[in-house]
Length: 433
Image (cartoon, rainbow, N blue to C red; front, side, top):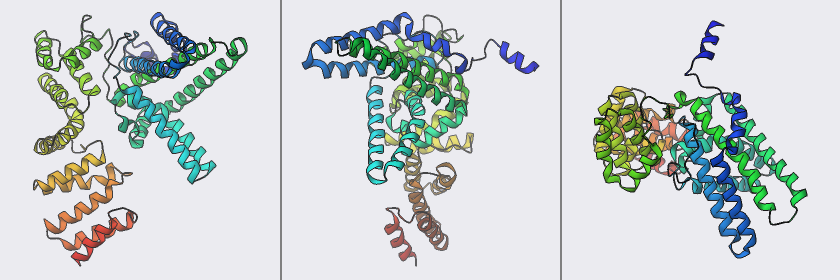
């Protein structure tokens, strides 16, 4: 009991999201979100009065609102209590498009399952996708990557990190959606088919959607330690009040050449956390940009943050691979394995590409270590078949162990009989015999 009392009185303790329900409902009514929603509603009213422009204006309004929603999620996820600026670029320009693409993919999956597998299977897939949707929104918000947000393994990993409260989060999201539909339904009676109907319906929907995004962002903040996030709250000791992260990011993205000077200025001013926050946010919003990732690593090295260096290495290895610098990618992978024997890349495709690069570079032992990780690290990946075949080639051609190569190909064909590589594997097995 004493421990729970201490924890409750801890000024640094985070209030669970289920205890902040009233604050979530009040958030859209604060001045700036309310002003933004009224602006979108006014745009939709204008669209109702101008039929030729109705669809373009409505589409732009939806995109603008989604962008604002992700700005809200961003700030909540990193412990920033204030509302985002209306002109904030921190949410990423293309995230609304990616979210719409996610909805399109989900809809196509349900439609195809309905056509091929029947109604029951389609409903099962639909409910599964609804269960994944909050995780999808949170993961898209964190990574700014469409492919990562559709990666089921990543989504289940986020759900597992949050634990059972994720189910409570799903229940709240469903209830908020139902509440939005209920309010919209009751607006039909007084408004009917007047020009004010669509703006009123939009206001009801936007109110509950903003609550949802704010709640999802706060859930990320609540479980930030499990997810490897660092708080960037306004009251954090690291960054002075004059350091505006969103503004700094926007300035650097407009003029990337100024980043080195800004990093030096922050470090010389003894603001290492501000420099870390800035480069981390740039790398997070631009995951494939080598320059931003390099500068983030240089700041981590300068500040001696070895844990974050290892954690970021998986992303940076993939950046180096895409840039064609396989030598640097292999060296970073080897160094990271020395620091953390369980180190591996986030995506099975990237791990396989790096294993092939190691094979081509004559790094046979390193390639074997990468291949040995596949069954344990990527248990659901289709790339395991290709890893088995690559391992068999290594065993036969580099280690002259044809018997073990035959055994490995036999195991591959038993585990993956329908793999597109089956014919190639059988042909290679015939040459071994």
